[in-house]
Structures are given as C-alpha cells and as structure tokens.
Image (cartoon, rainbow, N blue to C red; front, side, top):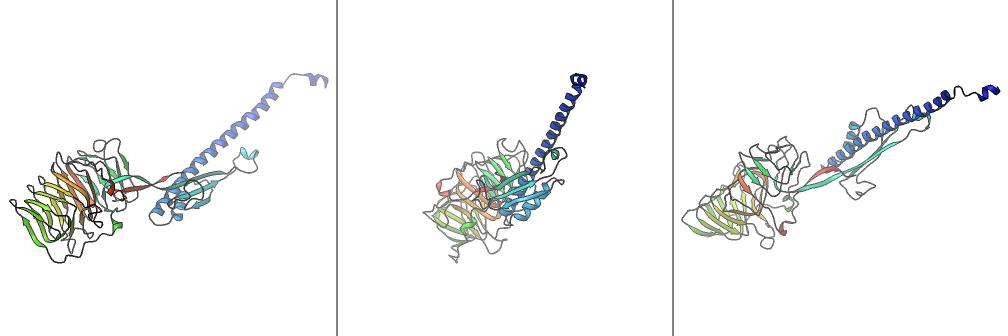
Length: 413
C-alpha cells in the first residue's frame, strides 16, 4: 500500500479523464447555447412577422388578433412549441403604448436539450418581443387612386422631374410602370402593388416602396360636391374665336367651352356641364382665384379638360380667403368619374397653380421643353406622363393642411 500510494504511474490518465469530462461538458453546453440562440432568432422572426401582420390588418380595419396569430404560427419553426405571452393593441409596454395603430406580440418557447438537462432541472425559456405600427414613408404630390390597372405610367421617352413623390393604390405588379426609355425623377415611389422601374428610369437615390398601404384620398375629407346652382346655363357650347379678347365670369357652361382667343377668367367657380373645357394652341388664358368644375349626369358625358400645347395659360386656384370652400382646387371633376381622359399638354407658357382633382377620371400630362410648375398637385384615378415636365412643387403654407403622406407597416421595437 505504501508503494502504491507513492507511485506516479497513471497520473496522466487520471488528469486526462478529468480534463476530458470538462472539455466534453463545455462543448456540449456550447452546442446547446448555439441551439438556444438559433431558437431566439427563429422566434424573433416569427413575432416580427406576427406583429407586422397584425398591424397591417388593423390598419385595413380588420382587427389584429387573427392575422397576428396566423402569421406567427406560419413563420415559427415547426419543431418548436410556442406560447403567446402577449398580443395587444396598443402595446402594454415600450415607447408605443399610446399608439392605437401599433400591435405588440411577445412569445416564448422552451424545451430540454440532452446535455444541458444534466445540469439544469428546468429548461431555459427563450423569449422574443416585437412591436409593429404604421409609419409615414414620405409625401406625394402625384396620387393615383385606382385600385387596379397601371396607376402611374410614362409614355415613350418622357423626361419628368416631379420634385415630389408619386404614389399608386393599384394592387397589380405594375402599379407604377416606368418605360425603360423614360425618366421619372422623384425622391420616393409608393405602390400597393409592384413597381416596374430600372436604374435608367429613376434616380439611384429614389426610395421604391412596394406592397404598401393604400394612400388616403387627401381631398375626400373635405366632402366637396358639384354646386347645384346656378341651374340655368350661362352659355351653351361657347366658342371664343382666335381674334376675340374677352373676360368671362363664373357660371354654368353647358356642352363645352372652347377658348381660342385672349380670355381672362374672373375669380370664382366655373361649372363645365358636359362637353370639355378646351384651350387651343394659340389661345391666351389667365385667371386668378378660379376653380373649374367638370360634371355631367353620367360618366359618359362628364366634362373633361383639354389643354393644348402652345397655349399661353396662367391659372391659379383660390386661396382660403378668396373661397374657403374651394381653396387650392384648380380643377375638380365629378367623383362619378369620366369615361374619357383629360389631357394637359404644356409648354414654356403653361403655369398652373393648384390641385387637379379627378378621383374617378384619368389624367394624361404631356410637357414640353421649358415647361415648369411651382405648385401643381395631381390626384386622379390614373396618371400618365409624356414629354418633358418639370415641377418644383414648393407649395406655400396654405397647403399645409393636406395629408399627402403614404404609410407602411414596420417593426419599430
């Protein structure tokens, strides 16, 4: 026993056995820790998706619980058992507790692993939380309200500088369709559907937001309607010849108004009842504080606008002081819509200041070299651009009450 006690033989084997146990245990714990980390990432992805789906459904007025739960389950790892700890609108914690658009999702998962269970009686709980809400992604001065078809498009070799964003509510893959030989310079594009654009058709700095929320009609809340008076026609199919210089006054102009001469519009509201408001190429037309209303008794005969290239136009919408009802509205088309398109063809002598509002009608805008607009907002069913157009759209403070923003759903916590 004395010799055995003092023997040094086999000590390396003992030390190796002890060290190997520690090494294997450490490696096993590292493997389990990697698994927990993977579960954490998978669970975070699932709650992010659930929160976004819930916030989107809430924004569309369909509630949040069903879609949030469904999307959470769809994105979760099928091998994990997930428990939803919290599903709320608005969130109960964090910076968005007062945001009624925000949805909070918190979930956990827990499962024993072979190695760590040797040391732990209770499996660790992996927890993930996400909050999603709707946020603004910019302001837009060209808005196409149609839920189908090409909302905003370019034709041929159009060269358009909007100086503002372009948004389309269409849900098709080409909601915004920019021809490869055209150029549309805007800081941001927003579509409910897809955007067909390339590096040769938009600036590299432009933000393209696809599959966003529909942008709200910024004029709808004003509840504007075609005036019922005067009921009698001020003029019928009035045609002002090229050699004529004339001032005309507000009223109801039936079956079209064609301007070829030198015309001044006195301030006020002009109702075009059927036909079209036509300005020919050699005409000279000015008007400050005017609103031109396009109407009829059926979409087939609702009046349209036809402004020819080469005409000298300088039109400004009324201010709030001049007309609180029609402030900032330059053209207003009856919401019932029109079966025919309106066409604005401009040149260096085209100056329009105000809102062109055609919620049920299509607008084709064709510019020419030198054409420019300081403040021209277009809200129509569909909008098409051709030619060369430049717009600063530095509208004054009288337009500040307009909500021209589009919204998207994003994870914010």
